[in-house]
Structures are given as C-alpha cells and as structure tokens.
Length: 264
Image 1 (spheres, rainbow, N blue to C red):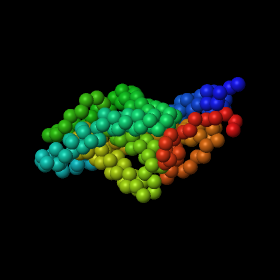
Image 2 (image 1 turned 30 degrees about the horizontal axis):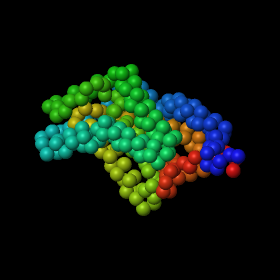
Image 3 (image 1 turned 45 degrees about the horizontal axis):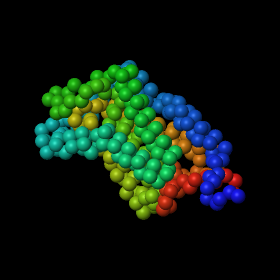
Image 4 (image 1 turned 90 degrees about the vertical axis):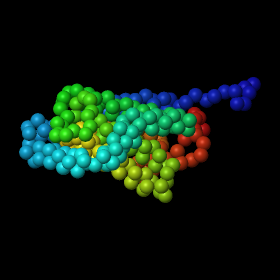
C-alpha cells in the first residue's frame, strides 16, 4: 500500500514542453529585438552620413550642457556621484542580481531566468554594438570627465533603460496601484537623468543616449513577449504587464508558483 505523502506527482508534460519553449521564445525574442532596433540602425545611418540636423543636436546639446556645468564644482561632484555610483551599470546590475535572488527565494524560477537573461543580453548587445560601430567619444574643450571605450550606444543609458524596465515588470504586482506610480516616476527620472549626466560630463553625444534607450527598451519588450508566450502555453493569465507585471502571482504571500500537480 502506497503511503500518503511519499509520492510526488511528476510535472505535466505540457509544463515541461512550455519550459522548453520558453527558452526558444527567449531566443526568438532576442531575434525580434534585432528587428525592433531598426530605429537605432536608422540613427546610425544618419550619424555616418553626417546629417546636419543630427550633428547640430549632438554638438549643440553636448556643448551647452557641458559649458553649463564646467565651472561649477558642486554640480560636477553631484553628476559624478550619480553617473559613477548611483546610476553606474555595475550598481544597476547588482540591483538586478538581488532581484533575481529574491525571485528564486519566492520560487519564481522562470521570472528569475527572464530577468537575468534580459539584463545579460543587454550588456552583451551593447558591447557588441560599441565594438562594431567604434564611434569616438566627444572631444570637448576643457573636459571634466573621461570614459574608456567607444561611444555608441551609451552603456549607462542602455543599462538604465533595461534594468528599470525589468524592475517595474517584476515588482508591479508587489507595489500595487498605490506605489507603482511613484516607482514609475523614479524610473523615468533615473533613465532621463543618467542620459543628461553622461552628456553634461562630455562622455556621450545625444544620439548615443537615444540609441541606448531605444535598444534597452526594445530588448525588454522582446523578451517580455517571450515570457508572456510561456504563460499562455501553460494556461496562465496574461494581464497587462505595465500595470500588473509579468507575474501577478507575486502579489500573494508565499511561493509565487505553486508546484504543478498533474491532472487534478
């Protein structure tokens, strides 16, 4: 006679299949991201063609912002703290790493994989584009900051857009309608702020920052589409991600994903 509680029902085959398809969808999402990045490709074409309006925007904005902070040591100190500390890509990635750890603790395995994969893909994509384009950084008179590597796209801007979008999609169900507007405001201020600081410090052009924002948001949109496809495959609801997040079960106390039991 089988003792109760000693036998664990295996996962449904459909759930195993959905998990495999999640990996395939994430890969397809990265491919779709390449298509979604068409505006960035167009921006790059305009840069290479030395399109006068874009040159004016780049040079004019960079020169104006740089001149406005160059002789203000206090402002420069704040910008450096924000750019190299608060909004530094390493800081943002550590925040995502902590989020992934929290998701694993909540047993939201697949959402943890999604968050880690999205941010990792963002970093690798940004690096690949930088090396491929090899655009020189601004050379302004009386520089107040220096940065290694190439300029296009802005790694700070791309990381900020990616990480803040991931955080909002993960924590939306936990924050609820009461705190979600404040979180969105903080995200917008941070994403816009990091772009402004990089331009004001003279280490990026406006077009570098725009490309970083577009690439980061396009990548998150593509991988979020892949995650929503997994939820459909497993019969889960797909709520509006901007208001309820990618996994609304996180709003509950206890595990976000109860273990599947076959066929009851």
